[in-house]
Image (cartoon, rainbow, N blue to C red; front, top):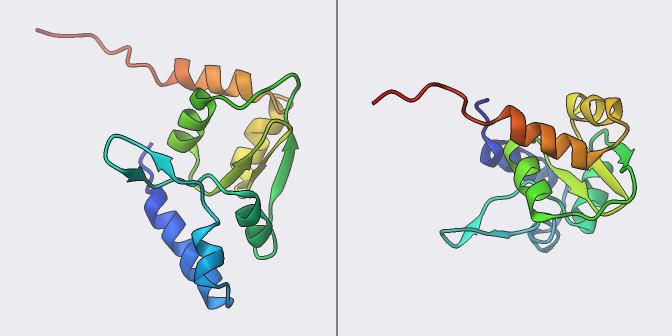
Length: 130
């Protein structure tokens, strides 16, 4: 899947700027991920970020099947799959894309299962030629 999270993120930032959201609030909207080269762009929202976006965009809140604890593999897979910002904690995930909401609702909010399926479905099974 070809995706451009930076483009999606920039469009959202430009939109909220046009709605008089301060630069300080915009700075605190997204979680920064530390990667191999300094900070990597992330679509993961902070609590402040999800509150701001819920005022301007339709959101879908999905209760996460319990017991659940957010792990780095969940964040990694969400970052690879999500096209729009999302918020996740140990009890719920908030998405701003209908497709993502439907996918998560179909499996009853089981983020663990979604993450396992994502990992399995994205393995490279192509034959290796020498």
